[in-house]
Length: 507
Ligand code: UN1
Image (cartoon, rainbow, N blue to C red; front, side, top):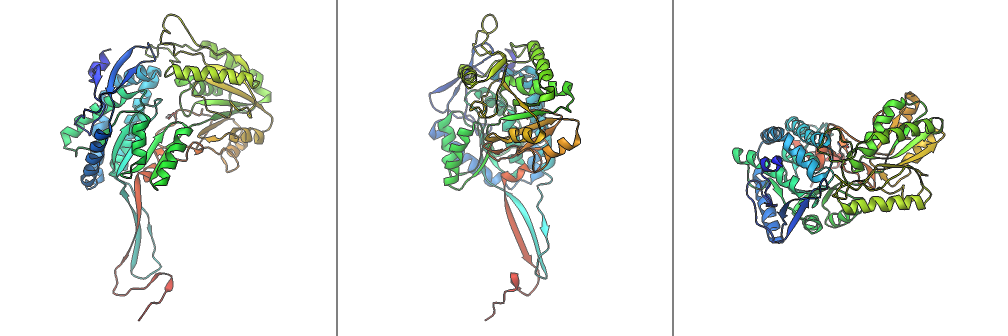
């Protein structure tokens, strides 16, 4: 495991940092083991309350200085971070693949997203623009500007252990915020590795200590941040259950929240679809990352005229999927994150059968040589109806549901008729269907694609979803606005003081 050495990951790693300095933390440790081979990789110190307060104090002080750096200068730091990440792309991609279990291709793709968001953030650092408006009063100028918020608490999930942090922190940094990152307790080493990489840039550029902080832990450490008035924005990625709990606590202190929660994403396959590309989109969407993306395709809503043909193609394609060590070339599907995830997958299959689902590609766990970790499962497909309780629910595993439809209006209603609203797609060559799907009477999701699957969004667009997905937007477009506070300014450059709305107030 040379990549661990090159990334400075020791068997006994420290997990709390204010940028270039590492704190001691509690005696308790998280053991990180790989779902690939079940072996323990390293242990990481957990953040205790005392270290947490040191981190927050340091972050608060850093903010006072960092917010005064011109945004393009902050962008220059992000540019250098991008370069350091670029140098470490292979090793970091391997670590992501080994600690999380996604294929090496996808691990590399995830690091690529980090590089891309750095580039995006550098450009953004010369923009961050507000609007100007015309005042109703003579000799007055009115405009709006954006100022940094302060501390941004980032709680990220195991499935994108490095990219989601970079979407948040690189944008937050150019905005003038400081970040405290708590990576998922299932992939703490990805956090440690990123922190080591960026600390070099901080040292070389004398960036104030506390601009990018790392705390390791689980629910408790997340709760410290959500309850903490000093943390201006909580940006959290994870389950809908977690998001609901966070929004209540942050809402009670009128703090800001950016939530990226569960999806229940569907592809509509019309009778007018190019079935060959629809097949590729469905296959990658459903089985890629072993079904552990928030944008994973969970449901295929297929027109009755092509239903049987497409089902046959899909079943044949599933037979070709190579499941195994994700670090080996040619593997499509790696393990699930841990045995709890395997149990949830098995329970969902049972529930689906009980509720009337009919499996056309059976599921199950894999055993024997190469599968010793106990985390490898077979991607499976069931024919269901959309109203089944299990189909309404996001199971973070490769279980794909097939649903039949007759009219496009019915297909759109089925697609929308789930509590979540993240990603959606239609495969069709019919412009009327495509436009209807994209219209206000179409998909109710934050992402709606035509002739592309539900997963694999580019960083340039705003990423996020509606309803139980939480409503947050991260990454590209103007998602940066969530990391800043807006201020409206009106300036009077005359020697009169006319009041707005024509009010006269003279004595
Ligand atoms: C996630 O699953 O949390 O669109 C994010 C995609 C990726 C990001 C997914 N770019 O699939």
